Length: 322
Image (cartoon, rainbow, N blue to C red; front, side, top):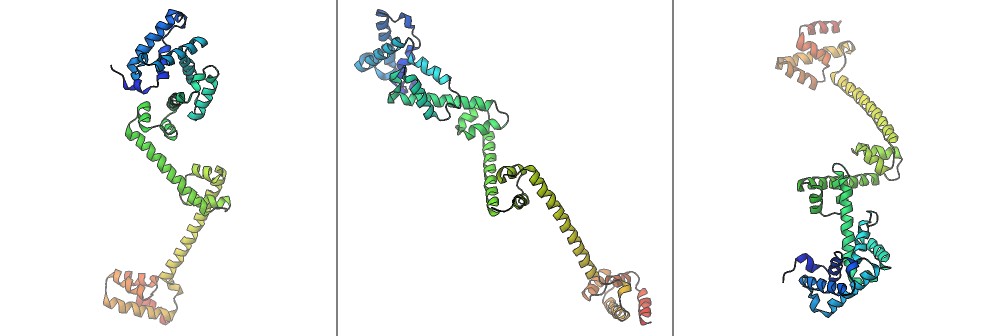
């Protein structure tokens, strides 16, 4: 005797109901009914339950047959029809959906509400839910279909097979989702640091820390106009900072270069020229002369003349002496 693994795993009540689907209830009268029972029992022997040689098994077939004939159709037909009629919203919670389904069918089929039937019905509802999730996912475009099934906690192998993608593609989307989650965690930390502050301060804090605008809108609960206003203010602030920095740099440069020739007092001019001549006795290299003059705080205006037209130093010295 051979039995398939799928068949042996099914409960006897379900195998009986499946066998009823192929029957014509109009033929199940008199000897036709008994013949059908005997035939079904022998066929079910191959399921591993040995129905034809079991009093309990034969009774189960007979009772199920009586229920079917009383209603006029197999119980499994009503169950299958109810499963097919489920929407995704109906079976988001498979356990609640199973309870509703069993309550609806229980008025006609009391046996279906037995505890030993519930596991199979839950399984059918879960499969229906999975089929509906896959159907909805296939209606989405790009990575949204993958993201949808990941969010619904569909098994990876199912996502790959149903959407026809590679393991690498799935891993890529999973990594992207993880990165987005990490960014959300980072933004939550940033927001916590400015909790209770005015919106413009909170926005500025996020912009300064390179948070994307769409995430600022979502997590800081502000609108695009508020972000634009803060960024404009920040641009003006940066321009002012740059202007002040340029002024400071120019002032520092002027201080380093010293006064112009016209601003040097005669006595100071003579001292500077004497220092330059001493320096030029040590070196004739312009670079070395400039370095030593800078170290001696000699004005750049005077150093420029010394390295470009040293003879003019005599003229400047003479004018300074009066």
